[in-house]
Amino acid sequence: MTDRVWLERALELAERGRGTTAPNPVVGTVLVREGEIVGEGWHERAGGPHAEIVALQAAGERARGATLYVTLEPCAHHGRTPPCADALAAAGVARVVAAVGDPSPENDGAGFERLRAAGIEVELAGGELEWRARAQNEAFRVWVAQGRPFVVYKAAETLDGRVAVPGRRWVTGEESRRRVHELRASMDAVAVGMGTVRADDPQLTARDVGAERQPRRLAFGRGPLPEGSELELVPGPLDGELGRLAGEGVQSLLLEGGPTLATAFVAAGLVDKLMLFIAPTLAGTGPRWLGELPEPVTLLRPSVERVGNDLLLTAYLREP
Image (cartoon, rainbow, N blue to C red; front, side, top):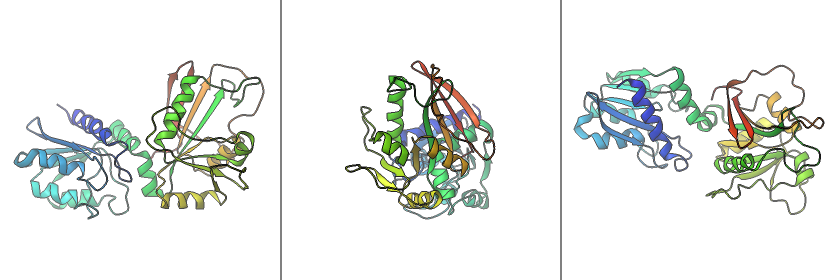
């Protein structure tokens, strides 16, 4: 089998840790010797063994001379667990193929350097596999590298770009609305602007999707909040407030506000990912989801999927 096959297996294994590893990333590994898997693993929980250690323990002596396929650069620092790079060297692993490097300040290439210094051959996958590995830990990567949450902007709009339809409560269908609740459940925080707070007094909770926890619910802008509101007011400059939220452990932030909030974040270069739910409707009038920008913004990796009768357009404004 090819390197690609084993890395795809590692990416698949990494997802088994989704939701239990925070604040750590999800990581998967496969140990292969003479064309056969001798060990594999994934990072199951923060503070527990890293994926590389799980695979080494499964392989035992068969790890000597094997190739390790891993979704993220092995760590070189001593945190809650010892460095994985040292464990790989001690086990006699001959080659490491990684999907992507680790942008953490304490690692960021140090893991690869430690492996090479131990005589281990190191290769990076590149191409589509690298992109998939980046996207798999997109929130973690932005959080550790830029000191702010990974920001997703979500909007529901008509085919002619309006965020409201005269005479209707909802722009998009039930399936899209459920998808939004699933999205909220996957995020650390959800936010709107004060215009949306005053107009709709939204709850911003993840409902009817079996959410194990609720995100923090925020309102950007100047108060006061309506009496009885359960939202947290975020009144300061965007950069400063995002840094504060990151310091409090918020890795991912979903924005659901109107055009004022969207325009402010996009113009400041603070939106990483865009998710537009597009209804097969022409409203003919009404506000659009985004205002005027100082210059055009090129979207990366656009994709479209059908959600009920709606379309979901997903694109990145920068690589994570």
